[in-house]
Image 1 (tube, rainbow, N blue to C red):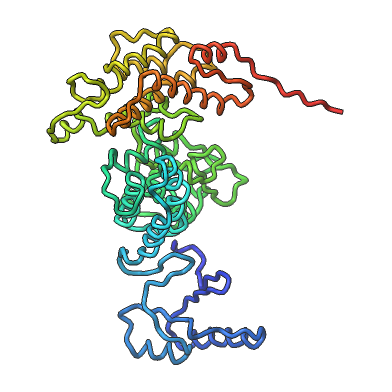
Image 2: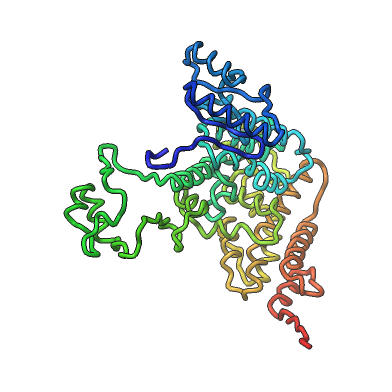
Length: 471
């Protein structure tokens, strides 16, 4: 605590109280007199068997015996759990945070992970698992290996839907924790959250960062003391501060108004000047270059599993032959989608096979996009950047996701002996787009299933205005 802050002699929450005191006999007796007076006045007794005295581990036994005899309360060892947070004075150990890790594991084991889709797992991680450590992170700063352990549990559940699962992790957890426009899927890294929450403690403690060799002039307690006749006292600023800080203040910061008596902290990342965890997180988090292509993957109303699949396609994170070769696995290839003796690669499966070419041509030609000469990623980009009316943009944005999703479903069905025709793939893509329109345009009465009819209706659709009659 800063030396000028008020002294804390007790913490109290409901029936849990911590009293800070020296081991001086007079102090201890005065504390017990207050407790005895409270017991006499309220007819409520302090349960000494559930209470404990906490002392430094190097405290001599003579002092320990004196404290126990005066208070009638036995000594206990650190750490102590208070309001769910471990309190200790030694090095931060994993065992102090084990209850939190155990709580997360118990929650995971209670869920039927194998019955969840990838979207269901993502929702539970975002809204349940990642919220469980928030209380702890808001008051203490746990070591990195505790947060890494939690991240490992989250990642195992996301990729394999179980604790200790062995499924391949197609992307690192740090990548998944990036915002969607930066190539992630929108999870929150607890490392970044911990920094943002810990900066809140800095703002409360009025702690600021200065160079290690910079000596603080403790005779100056207020900004007004470095002003002169309403302007900065230039000589005093250069006497107190390093030259670069003094120049920055003179050039960028206005002197305080004469009416202001006490200094007021101002959080420069918010226009109102008040601290917010959101602005702190956005300023301190790990970031990457935003890209429009990543943002186009996620369409409002499109099921998460479909959007996440094209995310994996775009990053080439699928168990196909070309990927397995890159990571060092060479094995006989079996292409499941057609009889062509070709390698099961990303381009062939989703764009060059006969079913893929027919499907892409069916949808793109009716939208005025030529397929010939394109690659898979170019065809996807053409859909995202198509020059269509505003109402059709979400449909064209979701079209590549639905196409690659149905081609992948067909590949898996044929792998296990269930033949799926090309016309069936086209029908399923149209069904997914029809469902998307129904979600995004609930005022549309009859949504056609055929692609050309859907395009025509979306181009000519006029939203119905709801008229409220006022009496």
